[in-house]
Length: 445
Figure: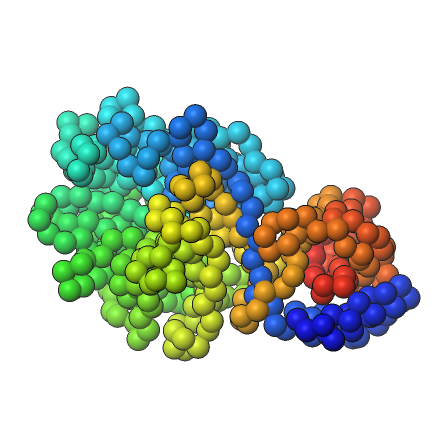
């Protein structure tokens, strides 16, 4: 944002203590945000007593709370195995409950890992993950399960994320059957679980889906999505999304994209291939578009870490026709990434882990900025908000700014100088915050 335009904004927001028309307000807002593509990083969970958080998954429940699960272990993988922990936020990610274990088979020497959450149309929450015994070089047979690696699904029928059923093992004929992607539901109430694995120990992995027509209680035999071996590299982590009567699948490591027109029964390559990627994650946004995040393979010199990237994925246009954003990077750290996202009103929250810094963190991306490639100079968090919101820099530092707040009708509400905007006494609805650094929109809930 140029100095001349900053001066313009500075003068405008100082003059707007009088009542302004909604047309003028909306024009100024659109001009101020037209060139923005922001994010802000916030720490959600830290390492503790030698244990680290890995592989997060986040979703919004029907009661409005955020539910997050993650893998908890002393290392990315080890012989003792790890467990799956859960936390809940009732204030859009500002604060979180103490973590509680959801799945733990360490007493059997089994690792429980790669958890993923989804919420069905009836409010039932599904948690998928896989288990196996790791011997230091790979997963090996064990007396406690039929397959070397087994995928399991748990259900929470009360919508709270607190009370879970016993896990159901997803049936398979494969030697190993792992999962690393959220379950989705089509408008025909068909539930699809992404998985990967191989039929013999020396085979390369391929990607599959398992179908359920009873909300995840029982599962049918898996269906092959990727019919080639990807030049000997195979396929593993896969993410699914359903939009406009089509199921899309994005795969690791090639970034190849597949699609199904019949609720996962048959698959074909899509005309767009993405870049090489680890741990892709697709979500459907409220505006019926798809948002894709992934972490890099670390093969590009300027992105030698497993940096987290994101973009709007529009299946009807070429991959390069929508910009790609660098969401997070961490100084050559390889043990990081596995992004997961959730829409929060006007924002997208993308969560990832960074083993080198011992944390789960989140980047906050305003939806009205993800079609351009410049960053703003501040963001509001939380947004939506109930009692207050903070003014943050893109480096998650609190900013103290002069501001004026207007409602959606263009009426002046308040002004001040602070890093906290109080919303306690305001009616629910949209408001516009004018500062010398720009304008941001906030939803009071």
